[in-house]
Length: 384
Ligand code: TXA
Ligand code: MG
Image (cartoon, rainbow, N blue to C red; front, side):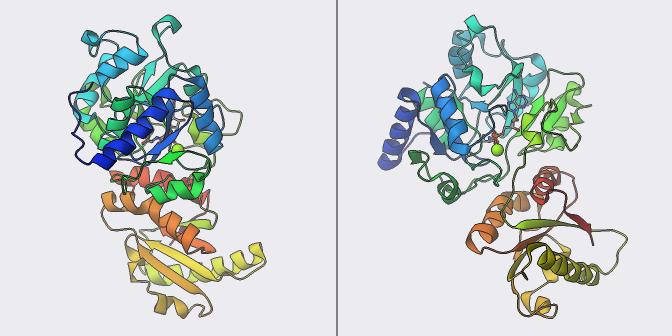
């Protein structure tokens, strides 16, 4: 079906993949599967009932559209445009060609015009009344094998319960969706760790709608001259009724149960640890008042200056609290790969009352990381 696929050499892996592929192809049910970015919750993008089941399992608002995953351009043409395979890239606007040639398969999602209904088999429910549909070819071999074996385009949002951090391990999916879906394919940890980059090349200038696995710098560098003036969808607090270009933007997202405080390094402050200490004590008092209870456990996720804060040092502020200090890594790629798993671990396993996270610069991977952290922190930013 798809000559570019890796061969499957393990018999049990093959059996599990065939089982999952059968669910996608022949039923209205959903399957969770790994991609290189985060785990997805997939169902046939050609089947309204399967798409409804995706929204239901995640408890996702129905006006937030889904990304359709295909295993090849060939499959996109055959299954979505109902065209034969010779047309190759003819159904895709030229502006996307350089990006597709360099970045697919991989964490890049593009928006395409929805073809007229006689030339298109995509369930209308995947697009939630948008004039476009979102599509990508993932690079994770399990994801691509699943899509190719079912020979069905798969609609898949991230496999978290709505509002929660995206899952980067099968255990995260199990935590959120256990008993709501029939099967999770466990492919280990997702390498990229944040979702795909969503771009819109149908507007002038082209837009980066969601920073993700490929950086803004990658898009500018690899997209050719038309992407040189690509704009980043500016952050704004969108109200519930406002029409937005990326409907996902208006919803609460990436939120642990514990309150998240995003600590932003202030270049003007020389002694970051002293400054953090003062803020820390102030926030402890504030949190105790808010929750009517003193915090018992606190996590501090560090990227740079706060690495030096060891639990012993923190005991000097308050020795009745248990502290978890965990580095997210120092390089953008590592911070990105560790981010959701670290938020989930301190929230769901350690069950801390408060999470401090040290922010990073918004260049390269920093843009996607800070986009997720700003949502997780829901406005709780503090300079230190
Ligand atoms: O990496 C990823 O993209 C993962 C994996 C599973 O592939 N999927 C993912 O899906 O992150 P989801 O549903 O969690 O996020 C899709 C984002 C949402 O913000 C949605 O609003 C936006 O893409 N989106 C989807 N279709 C769109 C469209 N036609 N126009 C504008 N935004 C769209
Ligand atoms: Mg999501």
